[in-house]
Length: 326
Image (cartoon, rainbow, N blue to C red; front, top):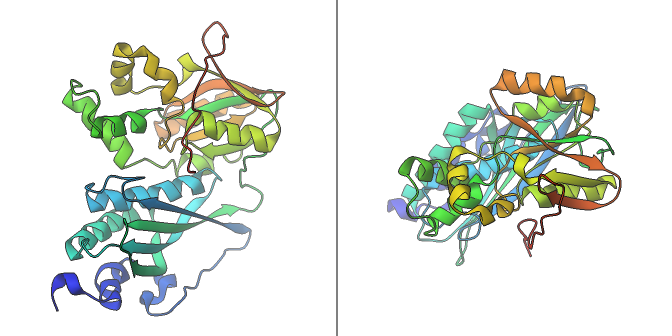
């Protein structure tokens, strides 16, 4: 049998069984066994990515695997959960053979070691269309410590981790934009698009403080809008306070009109937190402990919707607040 003619079960044995944890039972059964510790709740999330939509078809397979896993770990972090396990479903076209699968499995293995998680099982099918990859992540959180989107209150301050807009710019670079940008800045921005950094340490730490939390996947303005809608509040964000990386600042310096779009670009996978004003000291301590910038960018107030304003409080119009799936 040629390497690229492996059947379903041989693919599982070769590439995915080595990734299975004890609950996965060697991927020999149709289901897994998962324990839940007393006083804990399981947190479950699922996301899918599609070739040509969420990643480029020629992206290295190990990076595709890491993006798939990390966008789900980001959802767990946004509820304050610690990651434990995952399930994987792949729908792959025939031209993605064993070499692609080997690279994909390698990326999963590297991130399993980094984030302390393991594979429980899943499914593998073929498709005549683009590759579709779906992952279900399972985490745990102390009962009553989970953070939802619906708890923001008027007077809360809005914080965001890391920097915003890098992935949006990274995709622009991959599509031919900003050809004169220095190579180190290009590498930084493209890396942020291809391999996001889920804030798995921050989420559980901030869970005792945050009134509401979400990860920035569709765009900062759009995702903050989800918090406002479910919490029945409004938010105002000052554009100048939205944190930018050195690479993004270089681009904004030459193209100032792009800055509002960075707040709507998506794929940042930073955590957006609504927390009481009195928690600023604790948040600063977390930032120092983790070596991760946490920036106060606005506040929650009565009303509805999200306003992006300049330093004089004037509303900045935005044609798009984030990515739309449909």
